[in-house]
Picture 1: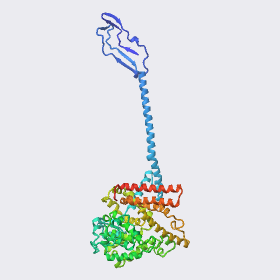
Picture 2 (picture 1 turned 135 degrees about the horizontal axis):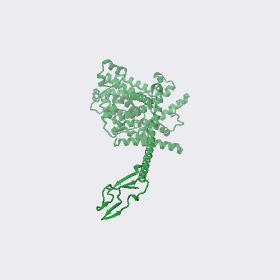
Picture 3 (picture 1 turned 90 degrees about the vertical axis):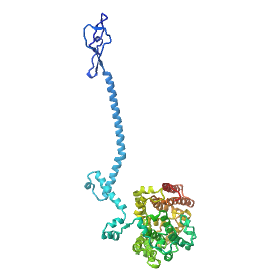
Picture 4 (picture 1 turned 180 degrees about the horizontal axis):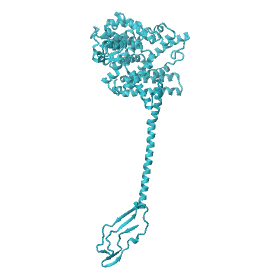
Amino acid sequence: FKMEGWCENVIVSGRRVTIPGEMLFDRQPPVQAANIVPHTVSERLVSDLQCVDESEEAATLFFDFTAPNQVEAGVDMAIIVFIMIVMAASSWDLSRMIGDMIVEPFEEMLVHAAYIVENFNLSIEECCENELDVMHIVLQKFARVTQLTVQEKVVSQEQMGSMDMESQALFTDIMDYTVLKREGAQRLSATAKSGDEGVMMATNLMVKRDVINSWKFDVLTQDDPGLAQVVVYMFFDSELSEATGRAWIDSETFMAFHGEVRKGYNDLPYHCYPHAIDVLHMVYRLQCIMQSGQWLAPIEQYALLVAGLCHDLGHFGKTNPFLVETQHEIALHYNDKSPLENMHCTKLFNIASQQETNPFKNADKQQFKDARKVCVETILHTDNAHHFDMVKEIGQIYEIVMDVCDQQAPSKVLKDQYKEVVLMKRKLTWMQLFLHMADVSNPLKPFDIAYAWTVRVLDEFFAQGDEEKQLGLPVGMLNDRDKVSRPGSQHGFINFLVAPFVVGAVRILPQLHVLSSQMADNLAKWRDAWEEEAKPSAEDLAKRTADVDKLLATAQELSARVNATGW
């Protein structure tokens, strides 16, 4: 739009010539000086050109960059607007994600936390200045509750050694703590010998040893002498014998003890001598599979077998609720607290009180005390009133030791961490679990065995139901022979009572996964038998089928976790 310093009158080759320059530009300058861009000519390309005005000033062109600058500014504004839109969209998305993932869950947590604080009888206004204080209090309370939940009444030998005598007495005599012994020390406790070393005791077995050492053993195929031989085998000739029968009792005393036990069982359809041997066998198998010799003391292994043999001594075919309802003498004697189980323990130790029938005659005072504790605690725990508490307890334990159990699952060899953190730390819990699982193990056996025991237990229930009708008492749900379907009754028993217990146990004790698989298969077979007998509606059948499919999937998951054959 403008030129300065242009020499219009020049002499070229001796001639005077006018070359137009500044006159050619006649435009208004830009409004903003920033849009003016000057460009000065650096040299002349015509060497013989001479300016008449003798001006040596170089020519300068002034360009108007208003339009390009406007275009550039427009592009810059567009980019800024685009970036702002992107930032706004990202901010909105991030805000939404934070709200969904953090804020809303945290607000929900605060609502629950406030409710929990109020349940602890604390005033939020008085104890908490803000939401973080609420969460802090709740977490402190949960930490304390968790500590109390997982705390075991156990003290190590090292801890006992650091205490004075009065403190040791406080823990062992008043607070009833168990002294946790090292594995080596446990092995030393089996010093008593029966005098029958190296001699096979069960010489008239009517069943093969490999059948006894499997889940296929059916006690109902044996008569009393045959069952007695199986008992002798488990105590004196099996892989547990060195820590059990042969370590603590001579064969003569044991046979006298066994004879008194046999006389203590009544001739009932279910709670009879064969049931006692069935439970004993289950306890024996659980100990073998879980390699109890690596984490239980020999006296504990032995006492647990004795508890299995004697767990229903004197049972007369009635349930605890019936005894309480009718104010039976043993319900009155034991103040309605597990009257049957208390009676079983009493009868066991009445037999043991006689030297000639004492199964613990070779134990010293402390060993007898340990054995009695195992027998009493495990037998009392077979009361079904404790069942769902145990389901809850093993669920809590699994949440705590989940990683250790999952690491153990693929291995047949017990890992040191698994033994120390899971098994040895809660020995009494697992002994209680073994006996209780054995007592409700009918659904865990091959179906033909499970079916036979189901018929027997329902016959006993029906006999009680007949008496309840005669006495004008409410008839138990499984006791009315006119209403209960044998196949139908097993669905609820397995699905709602046994399955949660067994699945929880197998999560912690993965070596027992075969039992959960058998239980799921049996539930499917009971569904088929019920369908054939009851001819249910499609809707009712679909509900039970869904339960069966769910349990089958769970069992498959538990077996896949082990990922081993031959267990």
